[in-house]
Image (cartoon, rainbow, N blue to C red; front, side, top):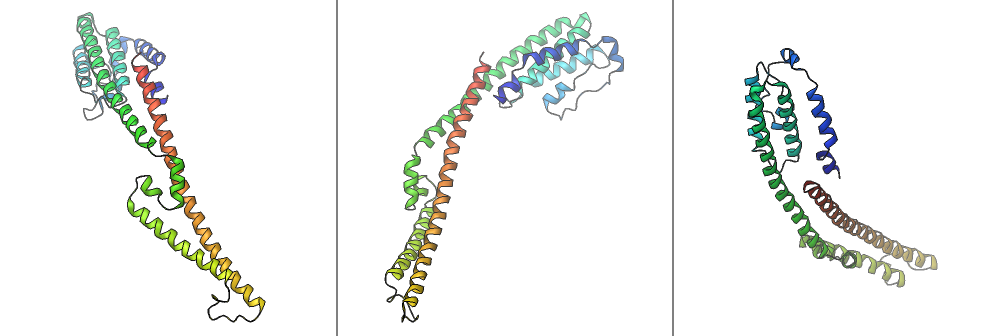
Length: 263
């Protein structure tokens, strides 16, 4: 709910508005005569807005900011904060500009509200597209059963089942075939030490035991690397499971955010 809390904070907005209204108009002479750099983001320009040398300049500057806000990117998650700040600035000017500008400021307030609704509609459409993207991901991710993926890992077919590049399946199968051959040689040496002793002398039971231990070591090496292979496969499956969970959690957050927007 971090996104929701950052955008929906009415108490903070009211406190900010009250703070602006406490500025006495007699302080205007001490405020710097500065208009925010046009190259800065619109939100920064609104935050830096202040009373200028006269009411006309102040009103024109504010009107320019309201006009710029009309074209804000609806995919920018600061859009709501932007319009809330503009609302605060308009109220601030109502409290500090002369009666001559009260009518134009009311019209500016209406325009800002209309722009807010337009950007909000576009932003909700964007959120709908994001939620739809998570829905599509959820459907695709659900097509792969994690139990079957574990079984496929045992025989090297996990990459193909998980729709990874087929070259990884080929590599896995070759790797397992090599380990299988090493294990076969080891178990054969253990069971038939005389036939697989090579040039080693087989004259005593101790000689046979040495050859058999070589077979056991060979089998152990094959088993060790097979377990490493399985561990890597399980790690990838757990990563896939985490991706499923993250997709669901992200979708829930955006749905909650949309719900708050539609209140």
